[in-house]
Image (cartoon, rainbow, N blue to C red; front, side, top):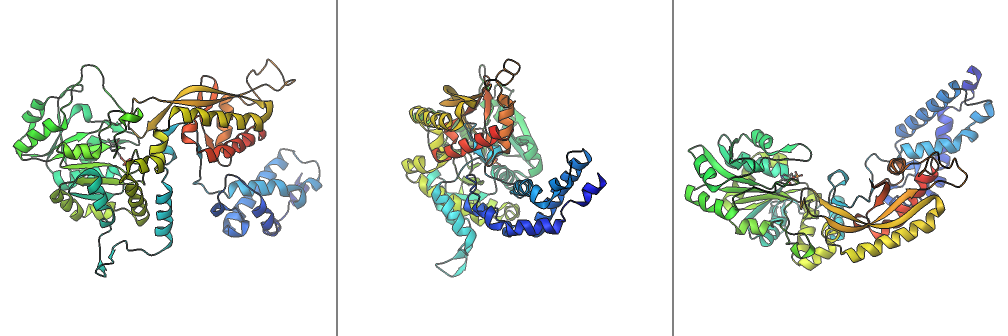
Length: 498
Ligand SMILES: *Cc1c(COP(=O)(O)O)cnc(C)c1O
């Protein structure tokens, strides 16, 4: 055995062989890869390549110890090369990668929330590759404000006097409270003291801002008189919080913004509203009722409103703050604003996205999040049929493919109760004739439905889907038709790779 170790190729030999194979690697068509992600070895940092080769050789040493090799010929560079190439190729993929979202959850925080409209993608590329007038006023040749690029659009779309954008809505809530309420009390209904995903809790953010939480009402019911009784010399503001992915039903009561505003005016206090997802369009006609828009919050009297850029709005990650000019000016001057400011690529994407909203029909067609949320069932059914047909033809008899009714979700804490009807492509691996029939019903190459779901996470690109009623279900709502061939390829890799 110890002599076998001596026949392992040297690291430098391996590196030279990989370098010589550059062209071969480049030619390997990988459907999941965009041109910018080419795995041509010449583009990889040599230390990375070297680490991968070393790791591969360690693996082979492990196998030698386990007695996997009978003679030295199996350890020649030529014999090991195909496996080494596959290993290096796998390991050289970036950590942060594209995935196929077949879950039907449109605003999926774990998968990057919103996809940008083509106009926004182009604006990001432009901002990333070139100098820009980010903080340069082209009219005067002097220093300008980065917020100027989106402020008038936001005012026009929400009816607010002024606007500002920070990193995300959590940052927006933090800086609003820090600016208006530090060291003083903010009155919030107990029914709205929610925790949303990613451990964002209103009471904790408030504590960080230095504002003092004054809870009023009962868990299920808060009345105007509860707010009124809590007002004192220490009160800085009233705050309303969207309860995000949480709903109370039954014997419940919240005070509408308009009523709270009347009290606030009488007390000379501002009303802050954390709208959460913050839609810019009413989507009631699309079967998505009840989500208030930012314009409605402003019209109903909120003095400052904050919401996310990458939830239902369908833009980049951002926290949008709109409201009364005097308040927005104070927030802009808060030193925290420098720490929370958005970058040029976000700004570029946001401006391009907001411009689409000037024409709501254009926004519905071009902003992927809106288009996916409002896609008619008829179109989803025909996409499911297309995908099912493609998979049936492409996968042979190894897997049973059918279409069944199902439900998708908006996600991102918006429309928590909305069941969006969809058509799912359901996949069940079937037993190959002759393979131990009866022992492992519902398996193929030893793959269960859950095993298939797991195997699809390792494909290129990985495919994320859910298991429902014993089948792996693909929701066409969150898959572009152009991605259907990639779905087929992922399934082939998953089924063939075991
Ligand atoms: C999502 C959400 C936030 C946090 O927004 P991010 O943009 O994710 O930081 C805050 N408040 C509410 C009510 C939310 O739904």
